[in-house]
Length: 75
Image (cartoon, rainbow, N blue to C red):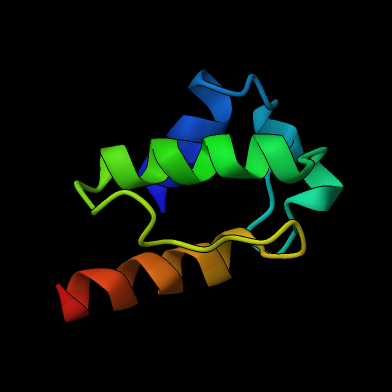
């Protein structure tokens, strides 16, 4: 989870006080384009194949982490 939070803090400039594991990306101000940018950053950070994640604006950090773990498990 720390890697994902670090991406939100460092790359997207979201304040730590705004980050909540259950808060949806849309609630954090992500639109479809920034969600795709987040996807690319997470895939790079976890060394996942490009396009292997499919985040949606209503996803939250918990669901994104579960998706990362599932992709890693199936890799």
